[in-house]
Image (cartoon, rainbow, N blue to C red):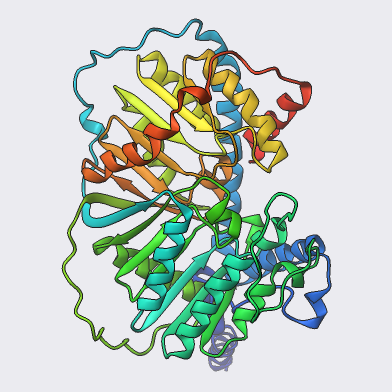
Length: 498
């Protein structure tokens, strides 16, 4: 009599808890997060202060990430703590102690033997690349690409201001959607709320009539996200706000046309981005565009977007074969994957002749220490940044960094204005252009993308177009800058948190 009762009890337990393995599997793999809409597009948030909306949004995004992807959220948090500890160690022992003990920098060594074989990239793909230093030319080619789309346009953008440039691009995308193109847009959820435009420093041209003009000093979520909210309401446009769990932001700038051409670089969709700040954009065709398209598809679904169910029709216009002038590979940064940082560190470590960098945010302790070590090997190290940006903390920080590198023998050039370029050139056989800054946020925390180039004609063009004119003798720093206590405080904070 006991055995049948025991068997029934076991069957009862199995039936009652059979969902446990399924629940564990879902917990491990996670589930798709619902799509988010930009703040300020509803009456409830339109008039809310942007900083208050940002804090509430970050808390909600973090909660949603933990609920839908607990393991990934855990890895993200652990990676952030590891990055902070790593940067702190380099800052204390490498930069503040090691660089002070270097003493007088040695003379340059022009007789270094050839190139370090480890610097030559492998697995490179051919591509046709065009660089755009001039903002007007970069905007013109972007508009041309949008107008030439046959079936779809995919956009991934960090800052999208409600100014003349931002509205003009939005109108072109809306027109493309009205003409039957599939337009998908991913916009970072926090950038517009953080970086509200300042009319005093960023004069705007005449507003476009079809979209309501923004206020002179936008403070609410509705004001800073005006053009994004307008675009989200246009027929045929699919727009999703990128969530920012644990304050990880998406700093990428990318436009994909029919999966065949890409527009990328450092420029945001803002009037200052094209016509005030010194920056660099690129267009690209070739096999790597397919890789970027695959990345966008995966990220689109990850943010809650509907997958591409129907194969888009083939282009009516035959695509001519590309004339490759570059060979390269894609690099990126995510909270848990750092191929951009690894590539940059590797290139500086293996430089024998020169290292040229342009970046407004040179605060990563690892980069600074490696630049000093390269200079001690006899490498010609030159950097260009500014102390006249519209970010007070960076101006203070760059003064201290300039003096540190100058004492290490690095040639420092101070751009007389605002710079936003993210580029590097090493020994004439390795180069980088992309969205990532050389700071803790871009190299460890945020989402970034870029291209690493191997030996190819595009590197000569990068030098002649960008570095040669920017290493202006009138901009070179020859004596240390006067510093204040505030400069040192900002530099310490930037090295650990920026």
